[in-house]
Image (tube, rainbow, N blue to C red; front, side, top):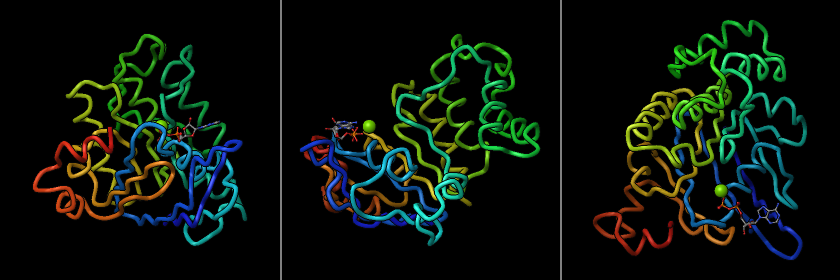
Length: 233
Ligand code: ADP
Ligand code: MG
């Protein structure tokens, strides 16, 4: 579904991403881990077409992203870091706006589906500004899902949520994974075995581990121990 091939990206002299490659298939939930500044957000911006890599290629369904960026973007849902939203809008109006931008036909049906799936019924007509963090996050995830993308990129989807809200977002991700390829970046190592079947760790823009949560566990000891926590926190 997604193939990232030898991408590198520098900001001035600083190399943020250094020759990164990986693949994600439908059914995969890949945990994307690494300390602050490792290059997770930059990688996600490149995959979603918000930034261009200096070298390397992104393939979506075997097609080079650059060959038809609009078609590629139509297959990707993206929750950016920090969940930017139009705070003056209600969830319903915001989702309607996203439908217009994405030129979604039958938008009413698509909006109703995500409002239902993300349990936004009770808040759909109130200003986003007044919503709790958990509801805001769900609105952000709803806009990422509204066009039923095959590839879903979620940048720190549980960051800053309380334990119950975190649990609900993880449950949602698990339910979505059947017919999508999903990448979630996270600081929380415990999330990896809980929701992911793959994980990739980067540090200083370079891949330092790729494998299953079990392989990761074996690598770092019986449990996900202190030594490893230091790498990802
Ligand atoms: P992460 O999401 O893993 O915390 P980022 O991808 O946000 O990491 O950042 C990786 C590195 O690239 C950081 O050192 C950051 O300061 C730098 N960086 C990211 N975006 C820019 C930019 N637009 N200009 C300059 N440096 C940037
Ligand atoms: Mg980040």
